[in-house]
Structures are given as structure tokens and as C-alpha cells.
Image (cartoon, rainbow, N blue to C red; front, side, top):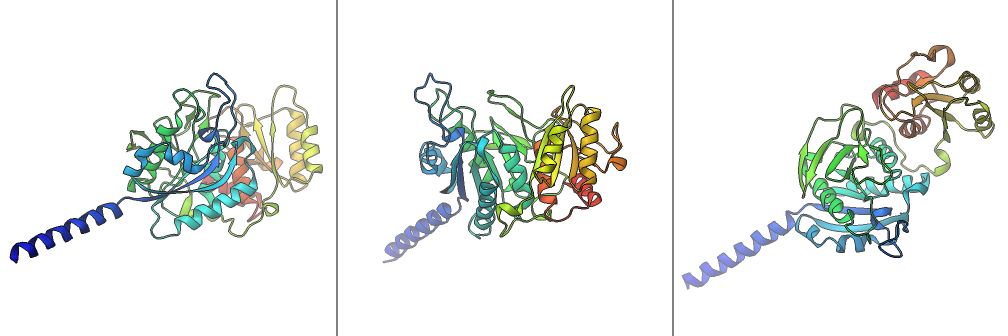
Length: 354
């Protein structure tokens, strides 16, 4: 009788321990938007491919090892190449990320995304997602049907990173090629290389190999739960239109005049050097600023700081210095900043803090 009771207790304990072990796996939700990681070629020797050809379930099933590190579920938010990323998808994605992370049983989110505008989406989310739970954006440089596709390994590492408690409080991260970057720092630097993403100003957030992550220095700027920006309930037409103008030798100011006539609320200069341009371009931008269009100076160089009143008299012209942000990220911050204020002094403060 005692032996029977002992066996029953032993079996019950084993079952409970197994159940606890199963439940202990982090719950990660994968939100898919398309991109190269879900792309397909007509044949493996073809350079071109169609983005977003595979569903989120197909991506998950292609990496069966994922079930060993997380309890996974997936949602298809969009199926596009990230070159066509737009405000509508951004708002939808931000809404889903905030909603999913608000669920007590969800530990993190992974977003599959094309690499072309991944840095912009990541930075946008870093400003409007108000949770300290991990968010990891992941993509690939080779389509899913390519020889030696990099997507499966990247996805495995992204899920492992999102499931890692050390990734909490770091804001959205961009993971590719065994390296992960802060959303603010990540930049796509090469058209085809697997290591296309770099963080030229402050370095990467860390490295990850077969799911094992090593974290480097922390981001010191404002993001996530410390961000004052929100797009809750916002529609696409409520996001102010902000354009980028590119500087080059002999650049004229007519493109600026055209954009002002089109009703843009802000213009970011992708300037030469530390955010400078031709006399004609600077004069046109100064005129735009007088008309109420907010002008931010950034640099086309890819790294470095565009500080106030260096070469260009920002105080006199009414410009904002973009600091470390590249033109595409300066546009994101300006767009969100304009939802709260049009005061150049306050907008400049945003560029100092975010």
C-alpha cells in the first residue's frame, strides 16, 4: 500500500515538474511584415526575388529548433518589401506591439522585417512602444529560397534574444548576422553583405551566437517607457508630412520651394559634411523656416554629430541640429515631435534627448 502511494506521489510530482518546465519557456509572439526573410526566388540562381512570399507560420516551421527555446505564436501584420513601408503599417505595427506586450503572459516580441527600412521602423517603435519587454526586429540579406539563406539562423537568434531577460529595458533591437544593435544606432551600410548593419557612432548593443547573447554598453538616450511620444488611436493623416532633401555639389533650392508649396510640415537636410549645403539650398531652407516649416540639419555621411551653429548659423536661420541622427531617423523624430509641438526650441531638445 505504501509502495503504491509512493509511486502515485512520484508520478504526480514528475508530471507537475514537467508541466512547470513546459510553462517555464518564455512566450514570444512573432509579428511578420514580409521582407527578404520571407522572400522567394523563381530559381536559386536568380538574384531578384519577391519579398513577403512566405507566411509567418512558414517561417516558424522552417526552424523547428525554435520550439526548444520559446512558446511561439505568430501574426501576419503585413506582407511587403520594406522599401514600401508606410505610416499605415507603422501605426498598425505599433498598436499590435503595445497590445501584445500588455498581455501578462507574453515575454517578448520578434518582428520579421525587410532590411531596407528596418532601422527606421525600429527607431519609430523605440519612441512609441511603452513597454520594457524585449522587442527584436530581424530580417535577412538572402531570401528564404537562396542557397545558404541567413534567415533561419537570424530568426533563431532573434527569438533567443527576445526570450533573454537581459534584453528587457533596452528598447527595440535590430538583430542580424550574429550581432544586435540599438534602434537609434543601427544603420544599413551595405547593399548585399550579410553584416550590412552597423552602429557607427556608439557601437553595437551586443553579439549573439547560436542563441547565446553577450551584451555591451547600454543606450543612454530616451526611449520606450521613458518616451513621451504616443500614436495610440492616431490615423495616418495625423502624422505630419516630413520630407528629406539631399545636398550635393551645385544643389539648387527649387526642390525646397516645391516641398513648401506641397504643404510639408518639416524638412530634413541630408547635408554634406556636418550638415551643410550650397548657399542656394541654405537660403531656400531659411525661407522655408520663416514660413513655419521646421528644418532639421543632418548629414549624408552616415556617422558623426551635427551640432548647433557649426558652419551654419542655426540661431539666425531658425534651424534644428540633428545631432547623431542620420537623415531617415531625424525624419522619424521630427514627424513624431511635430505631433506635440512646432516650437523649434522644444524640438531641438528632443534631438538632444532622443
